[in-house]
Image (cartoon, rainbow, N blue to C red):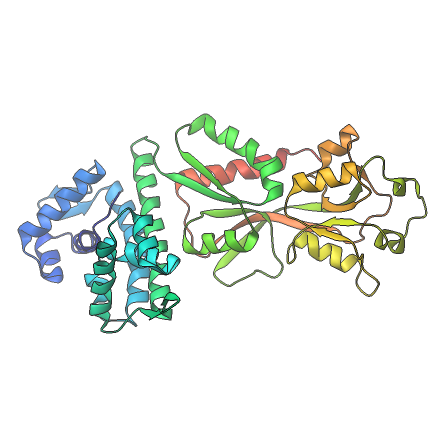
Amino acid sequence: MKWNLRHLRVFLAVTRHSSVSRAAAECNLSQPAVTQAMAKLERELGQPLFHHQAQGLFATPAGKLLALRVKRALERIDEAAAPISPRLSQTATRAQLEALIALRERENFTLAARHLGLAQPTVHRAVAALESEARRPLFERSAMGLRSSRAARALADAARLAFAELDQAVMELAELEGREAGEIVIGALPLSRSSILARAIIAFRRDRPRIAIRIAEGRYDDLLTGLRRGDIDFLLGALRDPVPIGDVVQEALFEDDVILVAGPQNPILSRADLTLDDLAALPWVVARRATPTRQIFDQLFAGRAAPDSVVETGSLVLMRQLLRESDHIGIVSGLQVASEIDLGLLCALPLQPKDGRRMIGLTSRSGWIPAGAQRALISEISRAVRQRSY
């Protein structure tokens, strides 16, 4: 839904005052304009937002729910816009903010316009209107392209989070009427994709078969960026210690053992007196740097000669193939390879890390309020964790 930010501000004024006339005075509009704006908003949402009584207009349950989300969304925009211009939060439109977001991401008007499906002059005018209100450029022009200012980045990031908040409002309003709408986006790290998440989604689908679910995959840093910008609702996977940044929170679900494994034909498996020096002489397949599994690998060889032959990868498929078809040693989540070990396709080494545990859980934005469907899916994830087999 393409929200009209001005109408949302009028809506909040009406909910505060329970009065069209007082809202009109606050927003510098005529009473008919306020009435028309509220009627249009109710038509777009397909449900009443106010009870019309002799004493005034009082928010319905849908109106109260929407007011909470709208207030949170507009506060984000207001806070980021205030240092740029005192009027910018009142004059900026959704189209202008969407153009700002696209240009901040792509640093090129042509690419930004293509992403939005608009003509380049349209995007240029939208950004120019913001810069005119700000009375200063929001982007630095150079031969290399465009570079957003700190203020532009802050406003673009705040707008993304505001739009995510409004998307949650759509989901909640649909639930209020017994409908399903919206999309849940999960940033899933490898362990969650291979074991927990599938069972949770299957259970979730029994009650909510039409809620769209999108799984975002990639490097942890990229997923964390998507979470902080509002593109991802929450992350599921290995937690970081310490918490990577102050605007996210982590919730532990369970501990996972990180183990050393090899292919069943690897001669090292016959060594009962295996030492770390023996392992250091072998080729290894390890996780990417700065991951919890890689940290355990680094700690394993801290203060001693580390392996010289190392393949670094985030692909569990590649790791499994290298282990099965060569003498490589791997370090990996025990849950991720439990099936292969049971089938004899991989084997745990007789020597294991003394402190090979990592915490698995959820990461979300600080202050995030999940919608009902999001809470239900998180509940199913917790249930899948409790029911998992070790």
